[in-house]
Length: 219
Image (cartoon, rainbow, N blue to C red):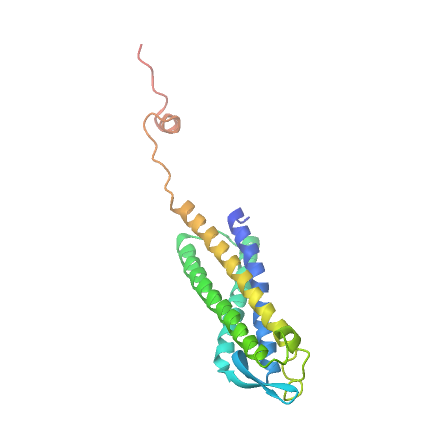
């Protein structure tokens, strides 16, 4: 059974949201791994001779929250996409009002989580970069990637990864908002009742004629 076009558009958005969530989670996880498990968001950097060091990192749970939220939403999008592809090919693919209600609630929660994650990435990266540029060792965070860090091998492509994670989160936020709009449209269309037939309507007349026979006109 073919899916309605609104639901097909919704699934296409879920596929894009899956990619954005996976990129955000992977990029932030790589960045945290390059700092030996420390979270660089809102961190303070110090200058150790000619090299930089993350002297005061944030709690690791902050990066775990952002990466975990992005990863879980990406997994949800993937599972939902696979479920509806399977249902459209094998089983009845109609989604009832209860399913729409649950989908609306999940989308609203997803928008909140992605918004929080994007803001944490935005302001956390900005705070880290201000700490780096205040040392006068470099003019930007992107240039700080070329400076040696202590211990050696730390902060490999940290700014590029954080920048990619932030951009992916903002794109994911837009996608989830569009998904919510499509689901609201489907909810409204499901909730719109069919108008009752009046006795003078042609459909009413055809149905009564089929049941009781045509009515004779009186001259």
